Image (cartoon, rainbow, N blue to C red; front, top):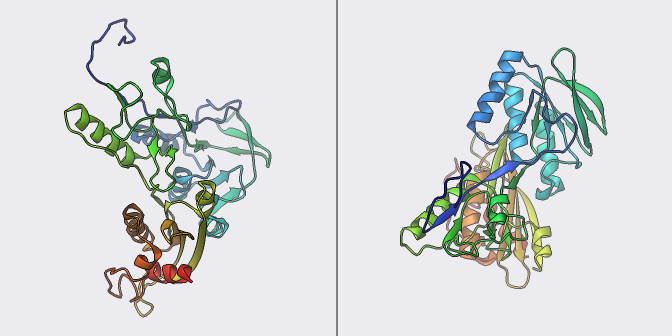
Length: 352
């Protein structure tokens, strides 16, 4: 292997962990001062420093993914007028129109302006150090911009070395994290994952997955024989007072994967009805109509969402059916749930 100063390094094993890079919009002015991406703590420190030094009052967030929505809360808590520019009509539409609308209501309730179905067209500087944003929805001025358009895997080095690139655009690996060259491994945001429900390779650039892959690749290089079984696609985030989480497939994704899927949505409560502070919780279960196997779940609510999705992620990993979920022995106490948990209620409704 040759490095940038021309030195050649010999190796028995190599791990490619080149990560990912922020996706850029490809418009004029995207490299202006005051336009940021957020990938790490250093980026976060730079953004906060800019806000304080420039006495910023306005922020524009381009995109409406997990990081973008979390940053809306951060900006509002710092007192910034916050506007989201997004090409689709609703944030996180993958979760379904009804759940996406709840997220939108939470944003607007907390003073975030959401410009849906709006395309970004470019940026230009002002004479006073601000930024003019050009979009299909109009032209307006801001003090800083956060580009939250997701990431792309860094695979140029891998491709030049002859490593296989999968259908997702990330490095293809087997269950041991080996590439098509057995003594070269790949781990983290540059490589694919096996999705245990769709049985397809997916690109899931998340920190917890990268940590697991790195540990398994290292263990195998060290002489162990560990496999990474894949993921069920669990995510969660918080936007103001709303918890949002998902695991497995949505009904649409399941059908795209060739499965016969049906879904049901119920409105429950996070605690027992009689217990103070109980809040609304909406949960959707997706199952295979041929065998009753759970395929996925999505939930939105004031609290208790993430704990239920975590439980359902375990159920997905274990291949549980709706029959098993409907009477699952979950821990019960009024501060945490009713005697019939929303999971039970949703499973029993879907069984009908």
